[in-house]
Amino acid sequence: MPVAIRPHVFSLYPLDEETIALAERSFRITCPGDEGHELWYTKADGIMVRSQRVTPEDVAKIGPQLKFLGKHGVGVDAIDVKGLSAKGVVVTNTPGVNATAVAELALTLALAVARNVPFIDREIRAGKTITKQAGGEGGMQLTGRTLGLIGGGNIGFTLGKMFHGAFGAKIIVYDPHLSPAMESAWTAAIPSYRRVTSLDDLLPASDVVSVHVPLFDSTRDMIGARELRLMKRSAVLINTARGGIVNEEALAQALDEGVILGAGLDAFSTEPPTLAQFSSLINHPRVVSTPHIGAASLDVISQTAKSVVEHLRDAFAG
Ligand code: NAD
Image 1 (cartoon, rainbow, N blue to C red):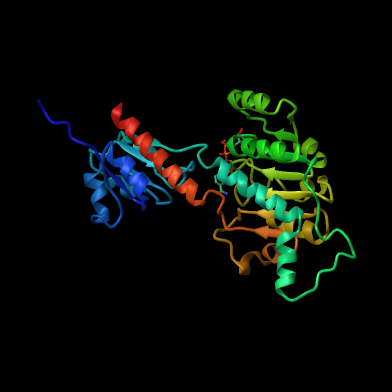
Image 2: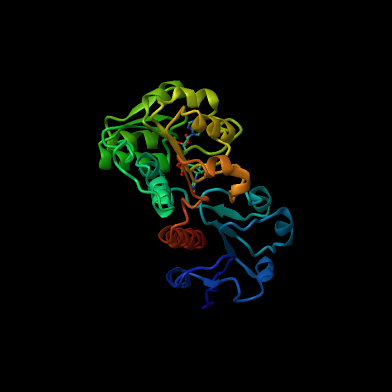
C-alpha cells in the first residue's frame, strides 16, 4: 500500500507552540529560521502569510507543488491573488476572527475619550492638581447613549452588541450593502436596532460614531468637514477601520473648533503614525491614538494563526 505523503507547509511568520502542534497533526510545518526562507518557492505545498507581501516576482518563482496560501487576517491587498490563481494556488483568509479584538479596542477608545481618561492621566503625571470644582472633568457617560455605526459587518456588529449589552445603548447602522445574513444576525441580537439610509440621518442622532467600512475609492474621505458638522458637539468619533476614510485635516480642524467632543483613532492615512506627521491629531487633548493595534492582541494572533492552519488542513483534505 502506498504511504500517504504529508503536505509540507511553510509559515512565513513565527507561530506559537500550540499552533505548531495543531499544524503538525495535519501536515509538516516549517517556520522562519527553521530552514532557508527562499526554500518555500520550490518545497512548500502550502504557505501561511501574515503581513508578508507575495509579489508577482515571488509568484514567478513558485513551483507547481504549491497548492494553497493561507492569509492571516482579512486583507489580501499585499498578495498577487490573480497571479497565484493563474498558477492554480487557492488563497484563503480568516474573516471575522479579529472582530472581537477590534471591537474591544473601539469600545476602549470610546470610553477613554468620553471619560477624558488619557488627558487627565497626563495632567496628573505632569504634576498638575486636578480639582473637581469646574465639573465635567470626568467626561460623558455612555449609558443610554446612541451608537451610530458606519458599516454593520463583523466588527460593527460585535461593537453594537457590546454597547447594547454594557450601556443599554440605542444602535443605528448605516450600511447600504449589509448582507442578508448580517441583517438577520442584527435583528436576532438587537431587535431594536435601526438601519438608516444615509449618513445625514446617522450623524446628528449619534453620541458615538464608529467607522467600520473597508477603504475603497467610494469610502475615502467619507467623513469630511460637512459630515463632522452634522455630528453633535458632544459626540465622539472612533475610527478603527482605515486611515483615509476620515479626512484627517478636517478632523483636526473640527476638534480645534469644538465641532465635536473628541476622537479615538487606530487608523491613520500613513502607518505607523508619527508625531511629526500627525501632531495636530496625536497631540490634541481630545484625541486618543493607537498605531493600528486593533487586531494585535496576543489572543487574536494565536487564534487567527490556528484558523489559518484549520483552513489549510481542510483544503488539503479536499
Ligand atoms: P466586514 O466586511 O465584515 O464589514 C464591512 C461592512 O462595511 C459590510 O457590512 C459592508 O456592507 C459595509 N460597507 C461597505 N461599503 C460601505 C459604505 N460605502 N457605506 C457603509 N457601509 C459599507 O468587515 P469587518 O471585519 O467588520 O472590518 C471592517 C474594517 O475594519 C475592515 O475593512 C478593515 O479596514 C478594518 N479592520 C481594522 C483592523 C484594525 O486592526 N484596526 C482589523 C481588522 C479590520
